[in-house]
Image (tube, rainbow, N blue to C red; front, top):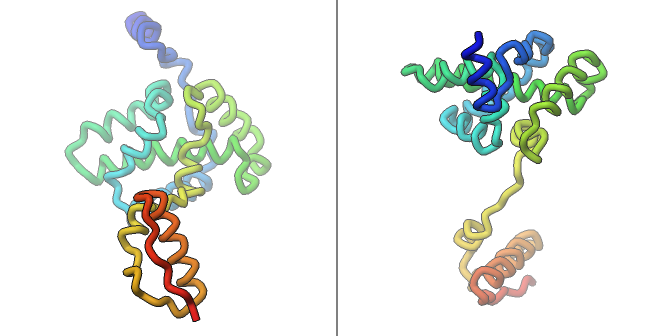
Length: 192
């Protein structure tokens, strides 16, 4: 135990006893978060899940909590893709549940006030980045990023004559992007 305390002091991680247990998270919320995460990754692939956790800068948070650290170790070292996906999904599910409770998204904090308070304390105590709820932002508010390069590449030829007002608006948007990207504006066709 003394060795573990010394390692915790040297690495800046709390002692194993200071790591909270996540049993207070409502099972129904965990199940719903799990369904959301799995449905997203069934479409987009589970291989991007570790990347999402990494880019969200959740590594230090995961390392501070024994339970999450164990899931990470198992997910990272197993040779089975299914077990690996399971471990990363459990980490994401736990963190997303904490974020939802702490923000009282959809009234979860009002339904489970004690759990919400614990979740807020855990996130506040362990918040090392400016982005407070990275998984909620990712899964519940997906970025509306549109690649201007992709739009410019997929734009119809300049000599096309759009017949509908919506197409004219799209063509004007593409022309504006082309102008910003290359300094040239493609000739717009008038709509009749």
